[in-house]
Image (cartoon, rainbow, N blue to C red):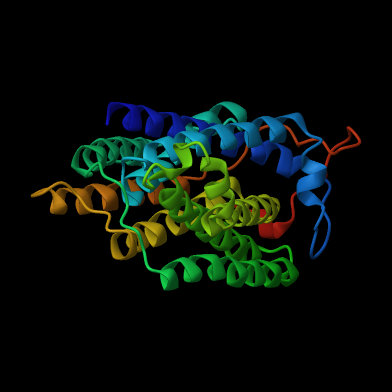
Length: 305
């Protein structure tokens, strides 16, 4: 249990830091109208984005370790709490500062995370039926179509919110698939574990969800402010998979602590939402384009929501 909680803390730090680094790269990348299939490829040439993606990968591995014992709602509450790290680092990178409401939200997140971790029952997920697994795999196709439609919608804030929603749901789907992989019966640790792993459709669902979440998140950052995008992603990737974990995977709180778990989860998500809405704007110099010159004024649709 201690190892799972430490892994969850590491996940929070990695994800929160990665968001800021990826936002730096996305904001200064060359902009293209409509669908930009090569956006992630171009961003991979930018050191902050590469570093952010590496931290995302490390955070994901730590979340797998946490998911071996902790239910989805506890781990996803930690993911929501990572926005606190993002807010603090944004104050350094973007010269933003937290007002009293922001500090109150940050305190609410911390209290919520401690309570949700203390109330979560450490156990493996229930094995779902075939229909549930098929549904988890098929949902990624639906989300991919929705993401493509959002990309074609334009460069405005509504497109950013739609892309962020798809990204959050995709990351949530990855969490569900990871929960099934990470909390199995130990088969993957046996001698022929690799063969079992490669034959498990949850592995490919996890990869597909992760890739879709990364691509739509990067596109959303180009169309909206980091706080707006992060707010939508946090809610989408926290609430939906938490409910799915309870309904489909048997996730639960410790006996007698169900109410505490619910209140703590809600407090964490609400705190994250409030914190991401505290958006004083950017006061730093104009970001640079790939050519080294000013990237130009930000489009009107990119202003703070």
